[in-house]
Image (cartoon, rainbow, N blue to C red; front, side, top):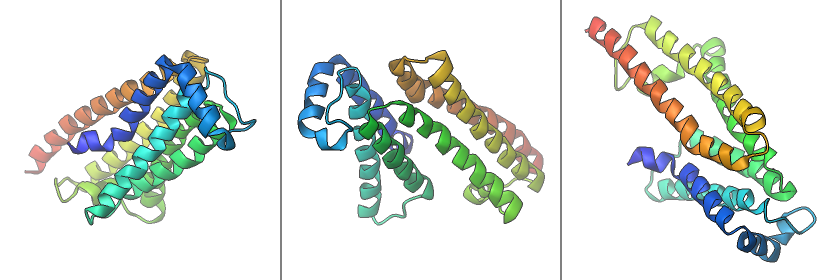
Length: 209
C-alpha cells in the first residue's frame, strides 16, 4: 500500500494526461475559461492542454499526500517536500508558459538533487544517508554501506541523464511517450535496480551473519 501511496501523484499525472488527451478540446476549453489568468497570453491550444491538466493534478495530488500525512500526525519526509517544491516550481513554469519542457526537466533535477544530497552528506558530513535510513532494518559491514550509497548516487545521476535522453532525443516532440516512460519506464527501472540491490545485500547479510 505504501508503494501505491508514494507513486500516487505519478499515477494521477499519467491518468490525467491520458484523459485530457482523449478530450483535448474540452481540456482546452476548461483551461481557457477557468485558468486563463495562470497562463501566458490567457489561452492555450488543444495540444498543450493535456500536459497542463496533468501537471495541475500532479501538484494537487502531492499536496494531498502531505495533508493526509499531517492529519495522521506523522512527519512528512524531506523527499516529499522536495517533490512538492519541484512540482510547484517546474509545474508552475509549465502551466504559465504552456511549455512541457519545464516539467520534463523536473524529473532530472529531482534525481540529481537526490544524488547531490547523498554525495554531500557522505563527503562533507561523513553521514551515509542510505545507512541512516536502513540500518534499523538490516545490518551490513561499513564497506557495503559505502558501496550502497555510491550505487544510489550513480543510479540517480544515470536516471537523470536517461530522462533527458528520452524526453529530448528518443521521444523528442512526443510528450505522450515521455509521460508513459515517466510513469512506467523509470518506475520499472527503479524496481529492477532495487531487486538487484536486494539480491546483492542478501549475500552480504548472510556473510555478516
